[in-house]
Length: 495
View (cartoon, rainbow, N blue to C red):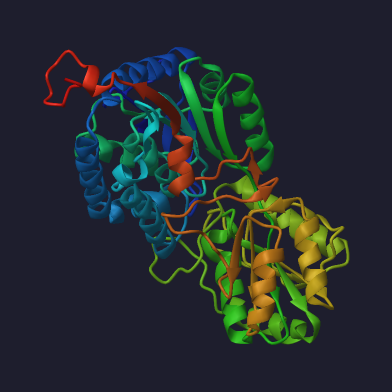
């Protein structure tokens, strides 16, 4: 059985804790590896390594950092098929989803390749007589990232490139469920030439997370995961004086107006709800059908669902893979049961799908006539379940989004430019799509929601990522008047 270890000081570092956790292939249900969990001493060793590396890395020139970042970008691109293979093997997502994840991660490396432009400060000459005032941005020190299972390559790449390019050192604590892909992208950074200790990887659980949150040498923590854990990370890290960016869960709404293109809306709903088995924080969970669009839209979605191919992600024909664990599958199926018992109409029941292996598969589910008091509406299911809420007016749809506890993303489908313009202003969410179901920003913008989807006020990657990983310093400088200098500079004198 392969044992997955830490990466500290540029080399594989075997754990001494004696604690391991199994890693499974979700498509077969079989254990594929064991993960060696970090002890407190190993967390401290990783932090010490990063702290020592920071003393030199912060002074490495921007030119050198950019050269290394370009080399890293090229290596990740050259190895994207291998990264995707590891994603499929441990997460279960199909090849197209895995390759898409890597592509979105590369966007963030490319953004960091231009970090010199992002780090330019400001300068005011002669703010007062002989006084100049200027600002610079400096790195924080050792920073850490705690990343989720659903995007084990992309989310670390939301953090690592900006953190390293701005002069910090980084400790990655990936999910225990699919650690191979994030470990591999860290190994590629070593191959690109980043010095030992600049990027370390710790395999661990809550023990490792808590130690990173309280360690005095860790200056900032980035987190993506469920809302309860995001709140815990934010509150704990802040208590210990750290900068924290903590992204939580979601319940994303897609409002479909009566004038919408039904085919476009149905295609979008199916891909956004069931892609990656619904295990993504930007998945569409709720279709808000306005007026008489509901019946034809539900029927169009149903027709498309019946054509979806569900199977092992290594099969090129598969369009959706398994869920990450058996427990996740059973939890999703139980929500379908709760919805049916609460009076919703189960149009397509994923629990009825049959699979010929022991993988963690379930079918796709469509539930109509959902009301806001049902658990299928109130909770983040994180699986291939799409709810349809019927409303009479656009205003009712906007109100649903406003009253929901989460505010990650929202979308509208319409041919009406005026309605679209109103929606982009009125939708109570941090990311809005207009005839786009999953409005994930490109790498040179920033990602983050509102309300319980974001704790604190700092979003992820792009310009906000650069700001998060640096601190601003303003310098006020006075030099003697050149005419009074003891050095003859050729200035005229009074005589």
